[in-house]
Amino acid sequence: MAQKDFDAIIVGAGFAGLYMLHKLRGLGLTARVFEAGDDVGGTWYWNRYPGARCDVESMEYSYSFDEELEQEWSWSERYATQPEILRYVQHVAERFDLKRDIAFSTRVTAATFDEASERWTVETDRGERLTARYCIMATGCLSTPNRPDIPGLDEFEGGVYQTGLWPHEGVDFTGQRVAVIGTGSSGIQSIPVIAREAAQVTVFQRTPNYVAPAHNHPMSAEYEQDFKGNYRQRRREMLQGYFGAIAHGHPSSAPSMSVSDEQRRALYEEGWQQGGLGILGSFPDLLFDRAGNETLAEFVRSKVREKVADPEVAELLCPKDHPVGSKRMCIDTGYFETFNRDNVALVDLNAEPIERISVHGLKTARREFAFDSIVLATGFDAITGTLAKIAITGRGGRTLAQKWADGPEAYLGLMPEGFPNLFLITGPGSPSVLSNMMVSIEQHVEWIGDCLAALGGRTIEATPEAERAWVEHGNAVAAATVYPDGKSWYTGANIPGKPRTFMAYIGGVPGYRAICQAIARDGYPGFAIAGRASPPPADFVALMAPPHEAEAA
Image 1: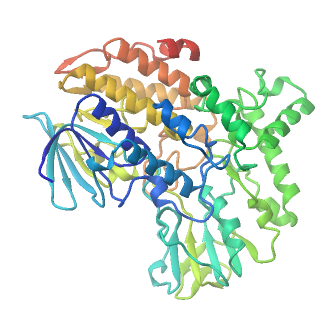
Image 2: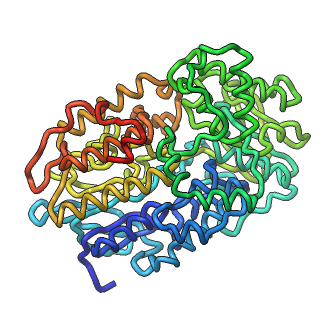
Image 3: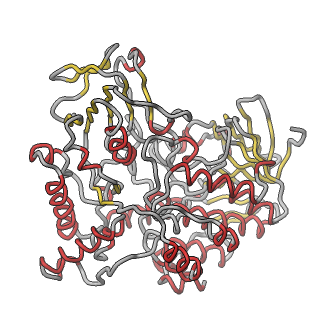
């Protein structure tokens, strides 16, 4: 690579990095992308475990920036599988000739801001050193798998597979005794598929999850044609949705506890039959009113009891220690029914925790098991995990790890104070994982692109006052909801030693977009541009216009 100096360096070639590269090209800026994998795809490159698929409907989980792309691509199912999503990402990269500016199989190890030149120096594991005016982290929210620290794990002589780092050649479990540790989304998706292949599957569960049915099915030509014929209106509906998705069915505008038990259950049943995560939007207050939330939680538990034949197993699979939605709700295809199979067993880790892995199996506090393979469906060091693996150094030699020692902070979830010209796509403090990621990715890329165009090469950085005000606002919004009640990867609770803080912004996609749009429109209050700082908005809530106003802004 001859060129060493760029306008921007982008880390990551998933959906965010690819669109960011395309956007910068359109602005006439030079950019280089570094990607650890040997191809594009991000999370959809690495997560190839059995049953992996998206929990957002395919027609909504796609780019909106190019109308021809929208029309030419066809999805085969309501919820696309990992291979199909990866083919889509590859198609986008080829269609816009993006790969020529991407260095694959290359990890960024360090990024250092030089105050004299006001440029970033980026180093890679290949010994390269490059500089750029702007450094943009498109590292993803779920891109660093969590490998549990279980004694003896490295001594196991069988196969050990991690869902987030699945072998690209696949795994054949035919005739095997398989342990699956973890019942989050990847476990819920993979367990039914593994159980159809393996001789015996033993599932080790610490915390049961609330799960709604996917009701997945082949994409009908009629639905696709209708969606494509009205794509602009559909996109507007997505941007007006709290989670950045279209509200299907007939959600109520009344509070959940203001209707009769029969009316409430009927609405939940409609959402259940519709399938997907839309049931969380049956009433507007389910994520705020704990009594109302409990009615939905009990409805979901009743469905588990209907599906699972063994009452004791059913109760173990019923979540009871957190509100529905406070941990990411999952969608499934035959997950609970899988526990009716003779070759599937469930172990409650609360009653018998794992003590160690042995050469040929696993030992809990009560018994020993023999296994041929172990599947670690143990999730991710979410949102900040990948950033923490890069030595990022800002003003005064302060590292991002030092700044975030007590929890991540960034103004708007876009820029951490003390790190000029460093942008985070879907970073902590933005809606990110509480939304349709495609909507949040596109919004951040477009905001960053517009910002760089307005800067004209000048330096921008968040002020301490703005970052502090945004964090306080985010905490206040979160405190009014059920989200902090759940011990989840939303708060870092799944990673030993990680600071406990709610890392996403809970104010909803429309409100957040309105805030970001107002800040850009008003000349970037809360930022210092070329050394000239302006105070942050006095009241972020006042900027959260209704969806139609936010889009008109």
